[in-house]
Image 1 (cartoon, rainbow, N blue to C red):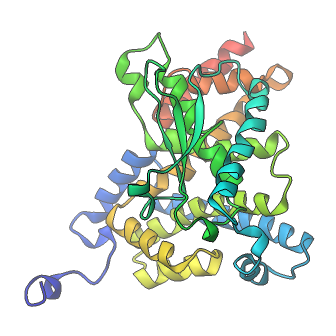
Image 2 (image 1 turned 180 degrees about the vertical axis):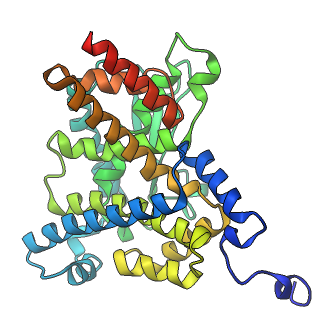
Length: 341
């Protein structure tokens, strides 16, 4: 490694440094986002989304008495009220958001999944190196419910303000609702029930975080900040992934961009940066999927006016399983035309 491999390695970490790297990156963008957007277009979208999220974050910081985002972010890690005091409190926090959202679902969807959702701990053998929470799909026959798994490892170091957005993302109306409805479809081939395009599946889950805001949740301003922080994270991905793989950013530039725009801990920044370098394009899917769903909803609202029904729109998005975003766009356009008639 030291004598032969490392000295021969490239100094530019981006994939564009390889032969035909720019073309390959464009292929990976298409594969991940299921769109035909260029790296430059996605980079600029990311910059705009970061600006938008930061403006909203600053409003919250000022309402809480802080002059700027830097001092507000610094306060988050020193405020004991924002940390869990026990594993039981952590579990209760997630469960406490699921119940009220469950009651709101009929306002948002005509079709709801039959599969139940449980909030359970991450298994002990996985906990140390696992995410704060994740969704574990239920069985197709309904014998095993879907499970929102909560990581209780080092529970008292977990931030409470991030939990509400995660509960909607991983649970309902995010992954549990979307994946369960797909599994329960009876009018599509089986492969359509289980195909998971990242831009659709993760885009829907990120969109679901915002749905919580739209139905009156995130009453705690710290939780609302947590929602924006989650959105910002996905927006930053657009900037740094295209930055390194298309604009010849260094690894240090990627790390610095995270520091400039988040209060994320150093360990996560380092692992995320390496992930984007080693997996070009994949991290673009989340935000691009969310933005496409929002774009299609706005398109339908403008076209249908008073005829627009949010419940019917959501059913149309979900009732064919996960789709490439261009196929989803065509499907919604056809639905709009049908609604007009």
